[in-house]
Image 1 (cartoon, rainbow over the protein chains, first blue to last red):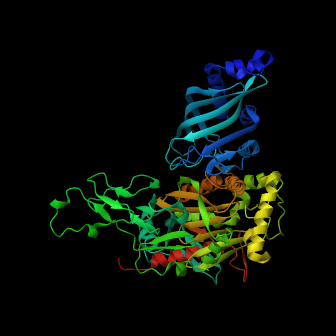
Image 2 (cartoon, rainbow over the protein chains, first blue to last red):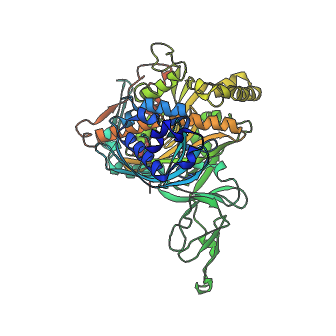
Image 3 (spheres, one colour):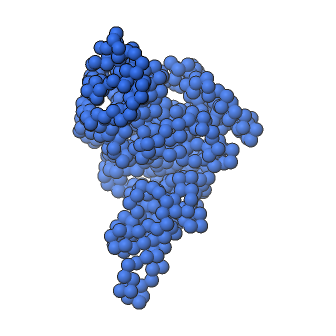
Length: 177
Length: 428
Protein backbone atom coordinates (compact mmCIF):
# COMPACT_ATOMS: atom_id res chain seq x y z
CA UNK A 1 0.00 0.00 0.00
CA UNK A 2 2.01 2.89 -1.34
CA UNK A 3 0.12 5.70 0.29
CA UNK A 4 0.42 4.11 3.71
CA UNK A 5 4.05 3.07 3.46
CA UNK A 6 4.91 6.58 2.38
CA UNK A 7 4.26 7.86 5.91
CA UNK A 8 7.78 9.17 6.32
CA UNK A 9 8.09 10.48 2.79
CA UNK A 10 6.58 13.17 0.69
CA UNK A 11 3.19 11.47 0.53
CA UNK A 12 2.61 12.64 4.09
CA UNK A 13 2.62 16.27 3.06
CA UNK A 14 -0.42 18.35 2.20
CA UNK A 15 -1.50 17.86 -1.35
CA UNK A 16 -0.68 14.17 -1.32
CA UNK A 17 -4.24 13.40 -2.31
CA UNK A 18 -3.47 14.82 -5.73
CA UNK A 19 -0.88 12.11 -6.37
CA UNK A 20 -2.85 9.04 -5.26
CA UNK A 21 -3.39 6.59 -8.10
CA UNK A 22 -6.34 4.33 -8.76
CA UNK A 23 -4.07 1.38 -8.11
CA UNK A 24 -3.33 2.66 -4.63
CA UNK A 25 -7.01 3.19 -3.97
CA UNK A 26 -7.79 -0.32 -5.21
CA UNK A 27 -5.14 -1.82 -2.95
CA UNK A 28 -6.62 0.09 -0.03
CA UNK A 29 -10.20 -1.02 -0.74
CA UNK A 30 -9.13 -4.64 -1.25
CA UNK A 31 -7.30 -4.58 2.07
CA UNK A 32 -10.35 -3.08 3.73
CA UNK A 33 -12.59 -5.79 2.24
CA UNK A 34 -10.19 -8.48 3.49
CA UNK A 35 -10.31 -7.07 7.03
CA UNK A 36 -14.11 -7.02 7.02
CA UNK A 37 -14.43 -10.52 5.57
CA UNK A 38 -12.03 -11.71 8.30
CA UNK A 39 -14.07 -9.89 10.99
CA UNK A 40 -10.91 -7.99 12.01
CA UNK A 41 -13.15 -5.17 13.12
CA UNK A 42 -10.67 -3.36 15.39
CA UNK A 43 -8.16 -3.29 12.55
CA UNK A 44 -10.90 -1.96 10.28
CA UNK A 45 -11.57 0.86 12.76
CA UNK A 46 -7.93 1.89 12.32
CA UNK A 47 -8.72 2.72 8.70
CA UNK A 48 -11.25 5.39 9.72
CA UNK A 49 -10.64 9.05 10.43
CA UNK A 50 -11.67 10.46 13.82
CA UNK A 51 -14.76 12.03 12.22
CA UNK A 52 -15.71 9.15 9.93
CA UNK A 53 -19.26 8.36 8.92
CA UNK A 54 -20.75 5.09 7.74
CA UNK A 55 -24.11 5.13 6.00
CA UNK A 56 -26.54 2.80 4.27
CA UNK A 57 -29.45 4.79 2.80
CA UNK A 58 -32.97 3.43 2.64
CA UNK A 59 -33.47 1.56 -0.61
CA UNK A 60 -36.10 4.01 -1.85
CA UNK A 61 -34.01 7.13 -1.13
CA UNK A 62 -30.45 6.28 -2.20
CA UNK A 63 -29.40 9.92 -2.70
CA UNK A 64 -30.76 11.39 0.52
CA UNK A 65 -29.32 13.05 3.63
CA UNK A 66 -29.75 11.25 6.97
CA UNK A 67 -30.58 14.57 8.67
CA UNK A 68 -33.97 14.63 6.95
CA UNK A 69 -34.45 11.09 5.66
CA UNK A 70 -34.78 7.74 7.37
CA UNK A 71 -31.73 5.61 6.58
CA UNK A 72 -30.95 1.99 7.33
CA UNK A 73 -27.64 3.00 8.91
CA UNK A 74 -26.31 6.52 9.57
CA UNK A 75 -23.40 6.24 12.01
CA UNK A 76 -21.00 8.91 13.16
CA UNK A 77 -17.68 7.70 14.53
CA UNK A 78 -19.15 7.17 18.02
CA UNK A 79 -21.93 5.01 16.67
CA UNK A 80 -19.48 3.14 14.43
CA UNK A 81 -17.37 2.31 17.48
CA UNK A 82 -20.48 1.29 19.41
CA UNK A 83 -21.51 -0.87 16.44
CA UNK A 84 -18.16 -2.65 16.53
CA UNK A 85 -18.40 -3.11 20.31
CA UNK A 86 -21.81 -4.65 19.75
CA UNK A 87 -20.72 -6.87 16.86
CA UNK A 88 -17.85 -8.27 18.92
CA UNK A 89 -20.27 -9.23 21.71
CA UNK A 90 -21.66 -12.75 21.55
CA UNK A 91 -25.03 -11.23 22.52
CA UNK A 92 -25.27 -9.53 19.13
CA UNK A 93 -27.55 -12.41 18.23
CA UNK A 94 -28.11 -11.46 14.60
CA UNK A 95 -24.38 -11.98 14.06
CA UNK A 96 -23.85 -14.79 16.53
CA UNK A 97 -22.80 -17.06 15.01
CA UNK A 98 -21.29 -14.60 12.60
CA UNK A 99 -22.13 -14.35 8.96
CA UNK A 100 -19.45 -15.43 6.58
CA UNK A 101 -19.04 -12.79 3.94
CA UNK A 102 -17.09 -12.52 0.73
CA UNK A 103 -16.77 -9.10 -0.85
CA UNK A 104 -16.03 -8.51 -4.50
CA UNK A 105 -15.03 -4.88 -5.02
CA UNK A 106 -14.73 -3.67 -8.58
CA UNK A 107 -15.08 -0.76 -11.04
CA UNK A 108 -13.08 1.47 -8.73
CA UNK A 109 -13.05 5.09 -9.88
CA UNK A 110 -11.63 8.26 -8.44
CA UNK A 111 -14.51 10.58 -9.30
CA UNK A 112 -13.25 13.78 -7.71
CA UNK A 113 -10.30 15.03 -5.70
CA UNK A 114 -8.80 18.12 -4.21
CA UNK A 115 -5.64 18.77 -2.18
CA UNK A 116 -6.86 16.92 0.90
CA UNK A 117 -9.29 14.22 -0.13
CA UNK A 118 -10.54 11.89 -2.82
CA UNK A 119 -14.03 10.90 -3.74
CA UNK A 120 -14.07 7.29 -4.81
CA UNK A 121 -16.83 5.07 -6.10
CA UNK A 122 -16.73 1.31 -6.49
CA UNK A 123 -19.17 -1.48 -7.19
CA UNK A 124 -19.63 -4.30 -4.75
CA UNK A 125 -21.16 -7.71 -4.41
CA UNK A 126 -21.19 -9.04 -0.88
CA UNK A 127 -22.14 -12.68 -0.54
CA UNK A 128 -23.41 -13.48 2.91
CA UNK A 129 -23.68 -17.01 4.25
CA UNK A 130 -25.13 -18.22 7.50
CA UNK A 131 -25.92 -21.67 8.79
CA UNK A 132 -29.18 -23.11 7.44
CA UNK A 133 -29.62 -20.18 5.10
CA UNK A 134 -29.19 -19.83 1.41
CA UNK A 135 -26.70 -17.25 0.22
CA UNK A 136 -27.79 -13.63 0.23
CA UNK A 137 -26.27 -11.33 -2.36
CA UNK A 138 -25.94 -7.65 -1.51
CA UNK A 139 -25.27 -5.75 -4.73
CA UNK A 140 -24.60 -2.05 -4.96
CA UNK A 141 -21.95 0.62 -4.98
CA UNK A 142 -19.76 2.31 -2.43
CA UNK A 143 -19.23 6.04 -2.18
CA UNK A 144 -16.09 6.88 -0.27
CA UNK A 145 -14.41 10.02 0.85
CA UNK A 146 -10.76 9.13 1.48
CA UNK A 147 -8.21 11.36 3.13
CA UNK A 148 -4.51 11.03 3.70
CA UNK A 149 -3.56 11.09 7.35
CA UNK A 150 0.03 10.52 8.41
CA UNK A 151 0.81 9.40 4.93
CA UNK A 152 -1.84 6.74 4.72
CA UNK A 153 -5.26 6.62 3.10
CA UNK A 154 -8.08 6.84 5.63
CA UNK A 155 -11.85 6.59 5.31
CA UNK A 156 -13.71 9.80 6.20
CA UNK A 157 -16.99 8.68 4.75
CA UNK A 158 -18.23 5.35 3.58
CA UNK A 159 -21.65 4.91 2.08
CA UNK A 160 -22.95 1.56 0.85
CA UNK A 161 -25.84 2.04 -1.56
CA UNK A 162 -27.85 -1.07 -2.35
CA UNK A 163 -29.39 -1.62 -5.79
CA UNK A 164 -32.29 -3.74 -4.50
CA UNK A 165 -35.54 -1.77 -4.71
CA UNK A 166 -36.29 -2.85 -1.17
CA UNK A 167 -34.21 -4.88 1.25
CA UNK A 168 -36.87 -7.57 0.97
CA UNK A 169 -35.39 -11.03 1.01
CA UNK A 170 -31.94 -9.66 1.88
CA UNK A 171 -33.37 -9.16 5.35
CA UNK A 172 -30.90 -7.30 7.48
CA UNK A 173 -27.73 -5.26 7.35
CA UNK A 174 -26.48 -6.56 10.68
CA UNK A 175 -22.84 -6.88 9.57
CA UNK A 176 -20.63 -4.10 8.16
CA UNK A 177 -21.76 -3.90 4.54
CA UNK B 1 -60.44 -27.02 12.09
CA UNK B 2 -62.99 -25.91 14.62
CA UNK B 3 -62.54 -29.02 16.76
CA UNK B 4 -58.87 -28.41 17.27
CA UNK B 5 -58.04 -26.01 20.13
CA UNK B 6 -55.69 -23.34 18.83
CA UNK B 7 -55.57 -21.08 21.86
CA UNK B 8 -56.12 -22.58 25.30
CA UNK B 9 -57.35 -20.02 27.79
CA UNK B 10 -58.23 -21.27 31.26
CA UNK B 11 -58.14 -18.37 33.75
CA UNK B 12 -59.18 -20.57 36.69
CA UNK B 13 -56.29 -22.93 36.11
CA UNK B 14 -54.12 -19.92 35.27
CA UNK B 15 -53.26 -21.54 31.99
CA UNK B 16 -52.86 -19.91 28.61
CA UNK B 17 -51.26 -21.64 25.66
CA UNK B 18 -50.98 -21.11 21.93
CA UNK B 19 -50.85 -24.08 19.62
CA UNK B 20 -47.71 -23.80 17.54
CA UNK B 21 -49.44 -25.17 14.45
CA UNK B 22 -51.03 -21.74 13.95
CA UNK B 23 -47.56 -20.38 13.22
CA UNK B 24 -46.82 -23.05 10.63
CA UNK B 25 -50.00 -24.25 8.96
CA UNK B 26 -50.81 -22.78 5.48
CA UNK B 27 -54.52 -23.57 6.03
CA UNK B 28 -54.52 -21.30 9.06
CA UNK B 29 -52.98 -18.58 6.94
CA UNK B 30 -55.82 -18.89 4.41
CA UNK B 31 -58.34 -18.61 7.25
CA UNK B 32 -56.53 -15.55 8.56
CA UNK B 33 -56.73 -13.86 5.18
CA UNK B 34 -60.49 -14.35 5.01
CA UNK B 35 -61.52 -14.00 8.64
CA UNK B 36 -59.03 -11.47 9.93
CA UNK B 37 -57.39 -9.41 7.21
CA UNK B 38 -60.55 -9.18 5.07
CA UNK B 39 -62.77 -8.21 8.03
CA UNK B 40 -60.56 -5.93 10.13
CA UNK B 41 -59.48 -2.34 9.54
CA UNK B 42 -56.04 -2.52 7.96
CA UNK B 43 -53.53 0.33 7.89
CA UNK B 44 -52.82 1.70 4.40
CA UNK B 45 -50.72 4.80 4.99
CA UNK B 46 -50.57 8.24 6.50
CA UNK B 47 -52.29 11.29 5.01
CA UNK B 48 -48.98 13.19 4.98
CA UNK B 49 -47.60 10.76 2.42
CA UNK B 50 -49.97 12.07 -0.28
CA UNK B 51 -50.23 15.82 0.28
CA UNK B 52 -51.34 17.24 -3.06
CA UNK B 53 -54.04 16.26 -5.55
CA UNK B 54 -52.56 13.55 -7.74
CA UNK B 55 -49.90 12.46 -5.22
CA UNK B 56 -49.82 8.69 -5.04
CA UNK B 57 -48.02 5.73 -3.53
CA UNK B 58 -48.56 2.18 -4.74
CA UNK B 59 -48.65 -0.43 -2.02
CA UNK B 60 -49.74 -3.98 -1.39
CA UNK B 61 -52.39 -4.08 1.33
CA UNK B 62 -53.92 -7.39 2.38
CA UNK B 63 -52.22 -8.91 -0.64
CA UNK B 64 -53.97 -6.50 -3.04
CA UNK B 65 -52.11 -3.94 -5.11
CA UNK B 66 -53.55 -0.51 -4.30
CA UNK B 67 -53.02 3.10 -5.28
CA UNK B 68 -53.03 5.27 -2.15
CA UNK B 69 -53.58 8.81 -3.36
CA UNK B 70 -55.11 12.26 -3.06
CA UNK B 71 -58.01 13.02 -5.45
CA UNK B 72 -58.73 16.27 -7.27
CA UNK B 73 -60.89 17.51 -4.37
CA UNK B 74 -58.05 16.88 -1.93
CA UNK B 75 -59.53 13.76 -0.31
CA UNK B 76 -57.39 10.74 0.44
CA UNK B 77 -58.53 7.68 -1.48
CA UNK B 78 -57.54 4.13 -2.22
CA UNK B 79 -58.02 2.35 -5.55
CA UNK B 80 -57.46 -1.27 -6.41
CA UNK B 81 -54.58 -1.12 -8.85
CA UNK B 82 -56.06 -3.29 -11.57
CA UNK B 83 -57.36 -2.17 -14.96
CA UNK B 84 -61.09 -2.61 -15.42
CA UNK B 85 -60.44 -3.77 -18.99
CA UNK B 86 -58.13 -6.81 -18.69
CA UNK B 87 -56.76 -6.45 -15.19
CA UNK B 88 -53.19 -5.25 -15.64
CA UNK B 89 -51.63 -3.30 -12.81
CA UNK B 90 -52.36 0.22 -13.99
CA UNK B 91 -49.81 2.22 -12.04
CA UNK B 92 -46.40 0.60 -11.86
CA UNK B 93 -44.47 3.43 -10.23
CA UNK B 94 -43.78 3.29 -6.50
CA UNK B 95 -44.78 6.93 -5.97
CA UNK B 96 -45.24 10.25 -7.69
CA UNK B 97 -47.80 12.78 -8.79
CA UNK B 98 -50.00 12.03 -11.79
CA UNK B 99 -52.87 13.68 -13.59
CA UNK B 100 -53.80 10.33 -15.10
CA UNK B 101 -53.03 6.69 -14.46
CA UNK B 102 -52.81 5.02 -17.84
CA UNK B 103 -52.72 1.28 -18.35
CA UNK B 104 -50.04 0.76 -20.99
CA UNK B 105 -51.53 -2.52 -22.25
CA UNK B 106 -54.45 -1.11 -24.29
CA UNK B 107 -54.25 2.48 -23.16
CA UNK B 108 -57.23 2.81 -20.83
CA UNK B 109 -56.69 5.90 -18.77
CA UNK B 110 -58.05 6.92 -15.36
CA UNK B 111 -58.09 10.36 -13.79
CA UNK B 112 -57.04 11.28 -10.24
CA UNK B 113 -60.49 10.41 -8.99
CA UNK B 114 -60.30 6.94 -10.48
CA UNK B 115 -62.78 7.73 -13.27
CA UNK B 116 -62.16 6.11 -16.62
CA UNK B 117 -61.60 9.06 -18.96
CA UNK B 118 -59.81 7.61 -21.93
CA UNK B 119 -60.55 4.50 -24.01
CA UNK B 120 -58.72 4.23 -27.34
CA UNK B 121 -61.18 3.31 -30.12
CA UNK B 122 -64.16 3.80 -27.83
CA UNK B 123 -66.58 3.80 -30.81
CA UNK B 124 -66.09 0.06 -31.32
CA UNK B 125 -67.78 -0.74 -28.01
CA UNK B 126 -71.54 -1.39 -28.14
CA UNK B 127 -73.86 1.55 -27.46
CA UNK B 128 -74.47 0.38 -23.88
CA UNK B 129 -70.82 0.78 -22.94
CA UNK B 130 -70.45 3.63 -20.47
CA UNK B 131 -67.06 4.75 -19.19
CA UNK B 132 -68.69 5.70 -15.91
CA UNK B 133 -69.21 1.98 -15.23
CA UNK B 134 -65.51 1.30 -15.38
CA UNK B 135 -63.75 3.51 -12.88
CA UNK B 136 -60.97 2.02 -10.77
CA UNK B 137 -62.49 -0.17 -8.07
CA UNK B 138 -62.21 0.90 -4.44
CA UNK B 139 -62.08 -1.16 -1.27
CA UNK B 140 -65.54 -1.12 0.33
CA UNK B 141 -64.44 1.14 3.19
CA UNK B 142 -61.66 3.68 3.67
CA UNK B 143 -61.53 5.82 6.81
CA UNK B 144 -58.87 7.69 8.71
CA UNK B 145 -58.20 8.56 12.31
CA UNK B 146 -55.96 11.57 13.04
CA UNK B 147 -54.05 11.10 9.80
CA UNK B 148 -53.77 7.30 9.86
CA UNK B 149 -55.65 5.81 6.90
CA UNK B 150 -57.19 2.36 7.05
CA UNK B 151 -59.22 0.26 4.65
CA UNK B 152 -61.69 -2.51 5.23
CA UNK B 153 -62.82 -5.14 2.73
CA UNK B 154 -65.95 -5.78 4.79
CA UNK B 155 -68.74 -3.37 3.80
CA UNK B 156 -70.49 -4.11 7.12
CA UNK B 157 -67.50 -3.25 9.30
CA UNK B 158 -68.04 -0.99 12.31
CA UNK B 159 -66.76 2.58 11.84
CA UNK B 160 -63.01 2.95 12.30
CA UNK B 161 -63.19 4.96 15.57
CA UNK B 162 -65.37 2.26 17.13
CA UNK B 163 -63.01 -0.41 15.92
CA UNK B 164 -59.99 1.40 17.37
CA UNK B 165 -61.67 1.52 20.80
CA UNK B 166 -59.07 2.13 23.52
CA UNK B 167 -56.28 2.39 20.94
CA UNK B 168 -57.50 5.91 20.12
CA UNK B 169 -56.14 7.25 23.41
CA UNK B 170 -52.70 5.91 22.53
CA UNK B 171 -52.79 7.26 18.97
CA UNK B 172 -53.73 10.63 20.49
CA UNK B 173 -50.63 10.49 22.71
CA UNK B 174 -48.51 10.20 19.58
CA UNK B 175 -50.30 12.95 17.66
CA UNK B 176 -50.21 15.33 20.66
CA UNK B 177 -46.46 15.65 20.10
CA UNK B 178 -47.25 17.99 17.21
CA UNK B 179 -48.24 21.58 18.11
CA UNK B 180 -50.76 21.59 15.25
CA UNK B 181 -51.86 18.00 15.77
CA UNK B 182 -50.26 17.09 12.46
CA UNK B 183 -47.65 14.39 12.31
CA UNK B 184 -45.89 13.48 9.09
CA UNK B 185 -44.20 10.42 7.71
CA UNK B 186 -40.54 11.20 7.04
CA UNK B 187 -39.16 10.05 3.69
CA UNK B 188 -37.17 6.82 3.59
CA UNK B 189 -38.85 3.42 3.88
CA UNK B 190 -37.48 0.37 5.61
CA UNK B 191 -38.84 -2.73 3.89
CA UNK B 192 -37.52 -6.13 4.79
CA UNK B 193 -38.65 -9.72 5.08
CA UNK B 194 -38.57 -11.91 8.15
CA UNK B 195 -38.65 -15.66 7.77
CA UNK B 196 -41.25 -16.11 10.45
CA UNK B 197 -44.99 -16.13 10.95
CA UNK B 198 -46.46 -12.61 11.12
CA UNK B 199 -48.02 -13.16 14.54
CA UNK B 200 -44.57 -13.62 16.04
CA UNK B 201 -43.84 -10.00 15.14
CA UNK B 202 -47.06 -8.91 16.85
CA UNK B 203 -45.85 -10.59 20.03
CA UNK B 204 -42.30 -9.32 19.68
CA UNK B 205 -43.37 -5.74 18.96
CA UNK B 206 -44.67 -5.20 22.46
CA UNK B 207 -43.20 -8.03 24.48
CA UNK B 208 -40.88 -6.32 26.96
CA UNK B 209 -39.92 -9.61 28.59
CA UNK B 210 -37.35 -10.22 25.85
CA UNK B 211 -35.50 -6.93 26.19
CA UNK B 212 -33.03 -8.01 28.83
CA UNK B 213 -31.62 -10.96 26.91
CA UNK B 214 -32.43 -10.33 23.25
CA UNK B 215 -31.34 -6.71 23.48
CA UNK B 216 -28.45 -7.04 25.94
CA UNK B 217 -26.11 -5.25 23.54
CA UNK B 218 -28.56 -2.37 23.06
CA UNK B 219 -28.94 -1.96 26.83
CA UNK B 220 -25.14 -2.00 27.09
CA UNK B 221 -24.95 0.67 24.40
CA UNK B 222 -27.28 2.93 26.39
CA UNK B 223 -25.36 2.26 29.60
CA UNK B 224 -21.98 2.93 27.95
CA UNK B 225 -23.38 6.19 26.58
CA UNK B 226 -24.27 7.34 30.10
CA UNK B 227 -27.99 6.55 30.26
CA UNK B 228 -29.11 5.65 33.81
CA UNK B 229 -30.03 1.97 33.83
CA UNK B 230 -30.88 1.09 37.45
CA UNK B 231 -33.87 -1.19 37.86
CA UNK B 232 -36.92 0.31 39.55
CA UNK B 233 -37.15 -2.62 42.01
CA UNK B 234 -36.61 -6.35 42.10
CA UNK B 235 -39.88 -7.19 40.33
CA UNK B 236 -38.82 -5.15 37.35
CA UNK B 237 -36.62 -6.58 34.64
CA UNK B 238 -36.09 -3.13 33.16
CA UNK B 239 -34.87 0.25 34.40
CA UNK B 240 -38.34 1.76 34.68
CA UNK B 241 -41.88 0.88 35.64
CA UNK B 242 -44.09 -0.22 32.78
CA UNK B 243 -47.39 -1.96 32.28
CA UNK B 244 -49.16 -4.01 29.65
CA UNK B 245 -52.74 -3.15 28.86
CA UNK B 246 -55.55 -4.49 26.67
CA UNK B 247 -57.50 -1.84 24.76
CA UNK B 248 -60.42 -3.78 23.27
CA UNK B 249 -60.90 -5.56 19.92
CA UNK B 250 -57.50 -7.21 20.26
CA UNK B 251 -55.58 -3.93 20.44
CA UNK B 252 -53.08 -3.68 23.28
CA UNK B 253 -50.13 -1.64 24.40
CA UNK B 254 -47.24 -1.28 26.73
CA UNK B 255 -47.16 1.94 28.72
CA UNK B 256 -43.76 2.56 30.28
CA UNK B 257 -42.03 5.27 32.25
CA UNK B 258 -39.30 6.38 29.91
CA UNK B 259 -35.60 5.72 30.47
CA UNK B 260 -34.41 5.51 26.86
CA UNK B 261 -34.84 9.15 25.81
CA UNK B 262 -37.47 10.75 23.59
CA UNK B 263 -37.16 13.34 20.84
CA UNK B 264 -40.36 14.85 22.35
CA UNK B 265 -39.01 15.58 24.86
CA UNK B 266 -36.60 13.86 27.17
CA UNK B 267 -32.88 14.29 26.64
CA UNK B 268 -30.39 11.45 27.09
CA UNK B 269 -26.60 11.65 26.68
CA UNK B 270 -26.75 9.85 23.32
CA UNK B 271 -28.30 12.98 21.78
CA UNK B 272 -25.17 15.00 22.65
CA UNK B 273 -24.83 18.17 24.73
CA UNK B 274 -25.59 20.32 21.71
CA UNK B 275 -29.13 18.88 21.54
CA UNK B 276 -30.06 19.87 25.09
CA UNK B 277 -31.47 23.35 24.33
CA UNK B 278 -33.55 22.02 21.41
CA UNK B 279 -35.08 19.25 23.53
CA UNK B 280 -35.73 21.78 26.33
CA UNK B 281 -37.47 24.10 23.88
CA UNK B 282 -39.70 21.29 22.61
CA UNK B 283 -40.54 20.43 26.19
CA UNK B 284 -41.49 24.05 26.96
CA UNK B 285 -43.83 24.17 23.98
CA UNK B 286 -45.42 20.91 25.08
CA UNK B 287 -46.00 22.14 28.65
CA UNK B 288 -47.37 25.48 27.45
CA UNK B 289 -49.79 23.77 25.11
CA UNK B 290 -50.85 20.73 27.13
CA UNK B 291 -50.08 21.60 30.75
CA UNK B 292 -47.55 19.86 32.99
CA UNK B 293 -49.47 16.65 33.51
CA UNK B 294 -50.40 15.93 29.90
CA UNK B 295 -46.95 17.03 28.71
CA UNK B 296 -45.37 14.54 31.09
CA UNK B 297 -47.79 11.87 29.89
CA UNK B 298 -46.73 12.50 26.28
CA UNK B 299 -43.03 13.05 26.85
CA UNK B 300 -42.10 10.79 29.76
CA UNK B 301 -43.77 7.56 28.74
CA UNK B 302 -43.05 5.29 25.83
CA UNK B 303 -45.68 3.04 24.41
CA UNK B 304 -45.71 0.23 21.87
CA UNK B 305 -49.26 0.01 20.56
CA UNK B 306 -50.53 -2.86 18.46
CA UNK B 307 -53.62 -2.02 16.46
CA UNK B 308 -55.09 -5.42 15.67
CA UNK B 309 -54.04 -7.21 13.60
CA UNK B 310 -50.85 -5.89 11.98
CA UNK B 311 -50.03 -2.28 12.84
CA UNK B 312 -47.45 -1.23 15.40
CA UNK B 313 -47.10 2.34 16.55
CA UNK B 314 -43.91 2.28 18.56
CA UNK B 315 -43.53 5.57 20.38
CA UNK B 316 -40.19 4.76 21.96
CA UNK B 317 -36.71 5.96 21.07
CA UNK B 318 -38.48 7.72 18.18
CA UNK B 319 -41.86 7.09 16.59
CA UNK B 320 -42.13 4.27 14.10
CA UNK B 321 -45.08 3.04 12.10
CA UNK B 322 -44.57 -0.59 11.28
CA UNK B 323 -46.94 -2.85 9.41
CA UNK B 324 -46.45 -6.37 8.15
CA UNK B 325 -48.27 -8.96 6.12
CA UNK B 326 -47.70 -12.66 5.58
CA UNK B 327 -46.09 -13.72 2.30
CA UNK B 328 -46.45 -17.31 3.51
CA UNK B 329 -47.10 -19.00 6.84
CA UNK B 330 -43.39 -18.76 7.59
CA UNK B 331 -42.54 -15.44 5.96
CA UNK B 332 -43.63 -11.82 6.22
CA UNK B 333 -42.80 -8.51 4.64
CA UNK B 334 -42.30 -5.63 7.03
CA UNK B 335 -42.66 -1.96 6.09
CA UNK B 336 -41.60 0.72 8.54
CA UNK B 337 -41.49 4.49 8.54
CA UNK B 338 -40.44 7.25 10.92
CA UNK B 339 -43.10 9.70 12.05
CA UNK B 340 -42.49 13.21 13.39
CA UNK B 341 -44.31 16.50 14.05
CA UNK B 342 -44.71 18.60 10.90
CA UNK B 343 -43.38 21.69 12.70
CA UNK B 344 -40.19 19.99 13.87
CA UNK B 345 -37.03 22.05 13.26
CA UNK B 346 -34.27 20.61 11.11
CA UNK B 347 -32.19 20.10 14.25
CA UNK B 348 -34.97 18.26 16.07
CA UNK B 349 -35.69 16.16 12.99
CA UNK B 350 -32.06 15.09 12.82
CA UNK B 351 -32.14 14.08 16.51
CA UNK B 352 -35.33 12.09 15.90
CA UNK B 353 -33.90 10.19 12.94
CA UNK B 354 -30.64 9.52 14.72
CA UNK B 355 -32.51 8.22 17.77
CA UNK B 356 -34.63 6.03 15.51
CA UNK B 357 -31.59 4.24 14.15
CA UNK B 358 -30.14 3.45 17.58
CA UNK B 359 -32.84 0.85 18.01
CA UNK B 360 -35.06 0.28 15.02
CA UNK B 361 -34.66 -1.12 11.58
CA UNK B 362 -32.58 -3.63 9.65
CA UNK B 363 -29.35 -1.86 10.57
CA UNK B 364 -30.32 -0.77 14.09
CA UNK B 365 -28.84 -2.02 17.33
CA UNK B 366 -31.96 -3.96 18.33
CA UNK B 367 -34.28 -4.91 15.45
CA UNK B 368 -31.77 -7.33 13.87
CA UNK B 369 -31.72 -9.33 17.09
CA UNK B 370 -35.53 -9.38 17.14
CA UNK B 371 -35.51 -10.74 13.61
CA UNK B 372 -32.98 -13.36 14.63
CA UNK B 373 -35.21 -14.35 17.57
CA UNK B 374 -38.31 -14.67 15.38
CA UNK B 375 -36.47 -16.72 12.80
CA UNK B 376 -35.08 -18.90 15.59
CA UNK B 377 -38.64 -19.50 16.81
CA UNK B 378 -39.89 -20.31 13.33
CA UNK B 379 -37.08 -22.74 12.59
CA UNK B 380 -37.46 -24.19 16.07
CA UNK B 381 -41.12 -25.03 15.70
CA UNK B 382 -41.40 -25.74 11.96
CA UNK B 383 -40.67 -29.42 12.25
CA UNK B 384 -41.39 -30.01 15.94
CA UNK B 385 -44.84 -28.53 16.48
CA UNK B 386 -46.49 -31.94 16.53
CA UNK B 387 -44.15 -33.25 19.23
CA UNK B 388 -44.01 -29.96 21.16
CA UNK B 389 -47.40 -28.44 20.38
CA UNK B 390 -47.83 -25.63 22.89
CA UNK B 391 -46.24 -22.27 23.66
CA UNK B 392 -46.87 -21.06 27.20
CA UNK B 393 -48.09 -17.49 27.71
CA UNK B 394 -49.11 -17.21 31.37
CA UNK B 395 -46.89 -14.43 32.73
CA UNK B 396 -48.87 -12.25 35.11
CA UNK B 397 -51.96 -14.49 35.08
CA UNK B 398 -51.89 -14.91 38.86
CA UNK B 399 -51.94 -11.15 39.43
CA UNK B 400 -55.21 -9.43 40.22
CA UNK B 401 -54.44 -5.86 39.25
CA UNK B 402 -51.86 -4.14 37.14
CA UNK B 403 -49.82 -6.21 34.72
CA UNK B 404 -46.21 -5.36 33.97
CA UNK B 405 -44.90 -4.72 30.48
CA UNK B 406 -42.85 -7.88 30.94
CA UNK B 407 -46.01 -9.85 31.73
CA UNK B 408 -48.13 -11.21 28.91
CA UNK B 409 -51.62 -9.82 29.37
CA UNK B 410 -51.28 -7.70 26.24
CA UNK B 411 -50.04 -10.66 24.21
CA UNK B 412 -52.97 -12.72 25.45
CA UNK B 413 -55.36 -9.93 24.42
CA UNK B 414 -54.10 -10.20 20.85
CA UNK B 415 -54.35 -13.98 20.82
CA UNK B 416 -57.86 -14.07 22.31
CA UNK B 417 -59.13 -11.76 19.59
CA UNK B 418 -57.28 -13.77 16.96
CA UNK B 419 -58.89 -16.94 18.27
CA UNK B 420 -62.35 -15.36 18.38
CA UNK B 421 -62.13 -14.20 14.76
CA UNK B 422 -60.52 -17.32 13.35
CA UNK B 423 -63.35 -19.39 14.82
CA UNK B 424 -66.15 -17.12 13.67
CA UNK B 425 -68.13 -18.68 10.85
CA UNK B 426 -69.18 -16.08 8.34
CA UNK B 427 -70.77 -16.35 4.97
CA UNK B 428 -68.32 -15.68 2.14
